[in-house]
Image (tube, rainbow over all chains, first blue to last red):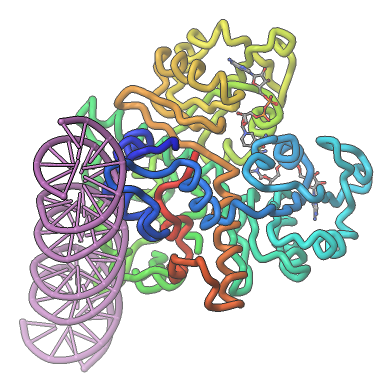
Length: 213
Length: 213
DNA sequence: CCATCTTTGTGCACGCGTTCACAAAGACAT
DNA sequence: ATGTCTTTGTGAACGCGTGCACAAAGATGG
Ligand SMILES: NC(=O)c1ccc[n+]([C@@H]2O[C@H](COP(=O)([O-])OP(=O)(O)OC[C@H]3O[C@@H](n4cnc5c(N)ncnc54)[C@H](O)[C@@H]3O)[C@@H](O)[C@H]2O)c1
Ligand SMILES: NC(=O)c1ccc[n+]([C@@H]2O[C@H](COP(=O)([O-])OP(=O)(O)OC[C@H]3O[C@@H](n4cnc5c(N)ncnc54)[C@H](O)[C@@H]3O)[C@@H](O)[C@H]2O)c1
């Protein structure tokens, strides 16, 4: 029986072994003292708890550059997610095959959701259409949304939204990058800012939305 | 002079005003007691501290479905990021224009990085090539990496890596989705974990820290 | 100049997640 | 069986972020 110890797993995952054991303990006591955890059983229990043992149909709305890339991505299927439908508002795309699957028109969005029992939707439309698409998805029964559009979606209680904002990912990297540069030339990294030198005009420029919900 | 109080900002952002004030205090104290914060100056200081006032050149390696979509994405430029180069290993792609920019071959990766002073790299290659690409980027001077390949990259100290794993995003949604279903039929046997109280709108936070690869 | 009012900046306490440390459980050898 | 050795499961300590509460700062008006 292939087993792993919490120590091995922790080292591989780069976390503390005690934390890992405590986490596992919330799922029940599946370990064997002096031996470790039965790999197969452990994987099953975790998968079950995370909801990976069932098949989740998802729809992708907005089959443009990003939507098409997502449709072609094979990594979803291997994790228990099945692309049930590709939906786009462009009539020219209707019927056109993407990733071996015909693109369907938004007119049929509601019926597609219902017929396939879809509860997870992916939004890859332009930002301007995102909220509208979101509303239709929710009205049709979708209760989880993965949003790629750079907009904050407002949804009713009970609906989960996760936003993937690549710009923010880059911003976080840039933040640390800036800090590294500052440390070398110990000049003005975390140094308190100078006095308000006539912010009459200010190099504010664009300045992104700083305070989203 | 347009101002905002910490109370107003906190309400808009849905956070505690004391926390907000304390956060601001780490940047220095430039609020005016009895009045609030000068909006323009505040925005500038935050942008500056986050590194948004400077221009960051980035390279994208692996111009396939995803890489091309990223190259075409206009959201980066508006946040201070400039795509300095597109790099791919496929000789057939060399010179071919993507997003109005010629794809360059990996042979020139090092010189491209150096000449453009790039410190942030995006990896959108297949998982198998990711580590190798990563090593070359790092050797060439890149110290921040945004990784889309479903692999854990190992890098030397001082190099930051952020991984965007879309499958995990879906898994998190599915996890909560399963929870919702379980709550309706309360008392579901086999369910050991307690519902994690949905702490506000935290993107993460409420998900078990350790997940199977 | 003094009184009052508003809002900041922060010391302090609380709560929660992480880590430590170890008794107990089980495997395995003798 | 009994002892040794490994690894789990968890109580307790620790650390850190969050929120409370309030003195101080500055504005404002008399
Ligand atoms: N491409 C990227 O790398 C990237 C990165 C981050 C975020 N995003 C965001 O993802 C979204 C899509 O990006 P993209 O590059 O694929 O854009 P795109 O313009 O290539 O594709 C958008 C697609 O959405 C469709 N569409 C428009 N309105 C629709 C509606 N109401 N219902 C259904 N479909 C509709 C269009 O027909 C088009 O096919 C954008 O909001 C973009 O900001 C993209
Ligand atoms: N498409 C998606 O939506 C998606 C989602 C999540 C993750 N990913 C991951 O992102 C990566 C790219 O996905 P994709 O769909 O664009 O794949 P893809 O096959 O369309 O593109 C990969 C590109 O990388 C290039 N490449 C291969 N080896 C290279 C090397 N050593 N150096 C430089 N370039 C190299 C290839 O020539 C190709 O152009 C994959 O690891 C995938 O798992 C993709």
